[in-house]
Image 1: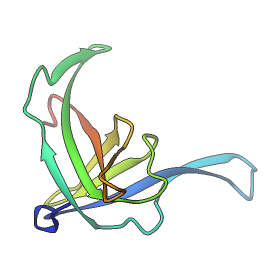
Image 2: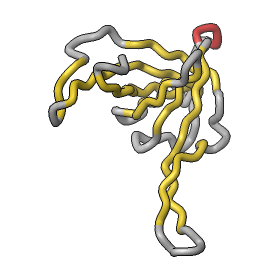
Image 3: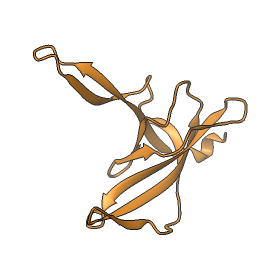
Image 4: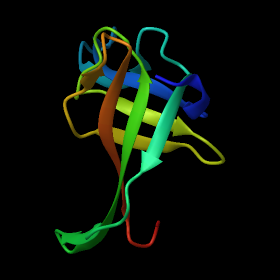
Length: 119
């Protein structure tokens, strides 16, 4: 992987469920995964192709992207990515992570979703 192409910063998060002390109810919250905060990455937005649709009467817009970063053990499709910039983009991982080379890096497909008014 070429370091010069990794000019974006991402944070990988995992959804963790904890039990509340007072009431004993389960609480889900996103936590940073294994020190993966603001790590270098290459984020390539995909060209729009039927990126809008209607779901339950609400117009939705999908922004897919290919994201590459150095190899990390344990990254799964159940996690999410925050792409840091002028405004942070929260993206869901939509494909199984692919290992590049001899564990040199990982490539994932991710997408952010917004209503048509937000885009």
